[in-house]
Length: 279
Ligand SMILES: Nc1nc2c(ncn2[C@@H]2O[C@H](COP(=O)(O)OP(=O)(O)OP(=O)(O)O)[C@@H](O)[C@H]2O)c(=O)[nH]1
Ligand SMILES: [Mg+2]
Figure 1 (cartoon, protein in one colour):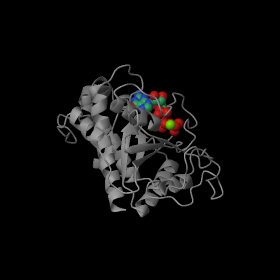
Figure 2 (cartoon, rainbow, N blue to C red):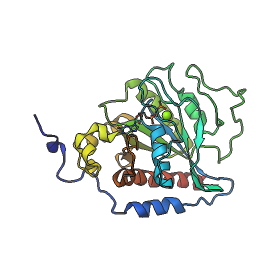
Figure 3 (cartoon, rainbow, N blue to C red):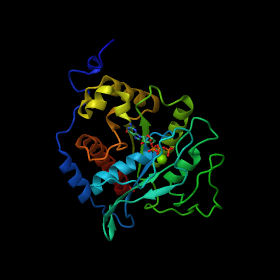
């Protein structure tokens, strides 16, 4: 049988910045947003059910707060989306303040048109029309008479950066239906000028070499292939796709998990800030 070792490139398929975790973390912790009327960068995560959206939020919070947290409930069973409400997650800085970036956790996109979050709701969320606590209805999008509908969103309510979350552990995980939904959402975000980035989760399950040593992610041909598949299917530039592994079974902090997440998070925050500055 072919050894997994031969699935590793001798050279990295992408260059890895030399910054260490502390400098990334320091940058993120000191980040300030200077724009009148905007309290935070709103980062919206969308993607197939079970992709690891809620887990990514928890991973970020765990890294920033330096202890395991579970604010956005993840789920271990496959099937229908576990997250069913539109909910903004803040990260506590100290007893009286939160960081100036927040995450919006969405219900998953399902391949079936009548299941999962309606792409129309995602588009309304981009424009800031959904209020926290709105329960997604897979059968129909929110109407303007719904109490959770915000008819006059400000820049603060809008989404400032859109993150597509896709798992790497299965080849061609995005079905044609998923791809159509993702493209619909991407086009709406493009028309609003919202920057877009992707994270590729579950890289530990995609490649045994990466599972045993996360530092090999940039040598892994499997991860390279999954990144290219995502780029080809939904059109996100290759250098804006970040492979990550979320905290999911760990009891202790892990430097390699943190390095990948912090790199992605810094880019997400910077793009979100650019959008806020321009609008
Ligand atoms: N091995 C591994 N498991 C992960 C990773 N990220 C998430 N998981 C697991 O995948 C499952 C689904 O994760 P969630 O974070 O609930 O996914 P989600 O995208 O929020 O799902 P919905 O809310 O149902 O749409 C959970 O059992 C997580 O522990 C990862 O990077 N590696
Ligand atoms: Mg979720």
